[in-house]
Length: 454
Image (cartoon, rainbow, N blue to C red; front, side, top):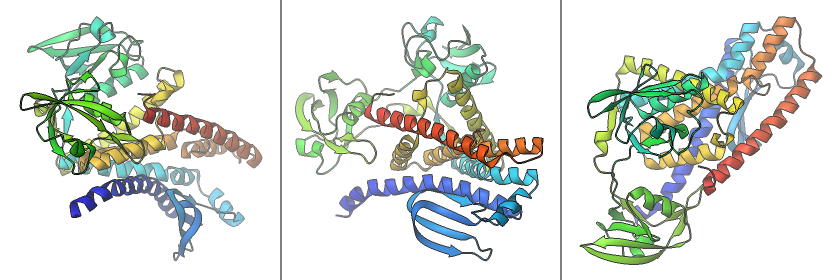
């Protein structure tokens, strides 16, 4: 009974945890603005958690209202309200103080990201070694004689340790229009791969990393059932532990990935599964049920064995307290550079708009990671979201913190305030553009969830 209750409550708890994490990040950003304004002698009118109808409110000794509202999706800090006196007090601040207040949220998110990266590095985490897996025929990688099993050791004089290093280095090479010089280890020999022209990292035939036509190596993963959920479609049909799935819907199963993908893509669908049990093949017709809080997924109710020899294709990294702080700071800086490079490539058209993800993607990814019950991965993901929010707010668009800083800088240079009506018009136009982009990103999220965008 208790196991069933936990099983039923786990998705709800994961959703609640995901919402809590995302809202905590946004609220922490707003508290950064609040703290910076207090340092500069400005008392905000209110600090609000959520939007919509007011649920609860209290005042502190500085007369700032702390409010809780109905919809728990972020929050905001009202620096001046409608008070002319408060507005004049803000305008009387020095330029540096105004900029500090605007940067307060970015600074807060960066500090939180560094702290989370620091915790993760102290706990320690596994990473995938940069070993090449599938190489698409006709792609750039195949043209440069890259082969499955090659271990990438260096790109453009940067030592490569993880697959993240590969992705980041290629991204930065494209953003700076730099040719790619790659060194690999093959059968104990160090080999220099022919130079990849700067125009090719995001083009060319074949799927794979940035369309170069190669993918990370995935260790063999036979689809062997290790657990069957009581009362699930698998249990009702008669699937058993140690059954090896050999085909699904007529498709030969060479890896458990095939099973997982087919199940996820077929909610409320009858599927055919063939398993090998004690040397005998058995065929089952099973009706999947729908499961998923943000994206509908087919649910069978089985657990599969982990990939074979996975450890030999992974590394483990762990830091101490001091070097962990340096590592965490470097990680946060790297994520900021990644955001900047990707944004630049989007602007010049070298990166597809389909790569953008919005709230639905972030929430679903957070839910997926929360469900994994892997605290280190969740910490790293949460830190990455913090750095994404920090970067977005640095973009010099008027409704973002970076845009406010840009306006403050212009006013400082010309020695007077911009016309409020002009500024209001700019804000309205910018808001319309941002809402359009947000709608497009949300559309991408929905299409990605439906499987139309990879």
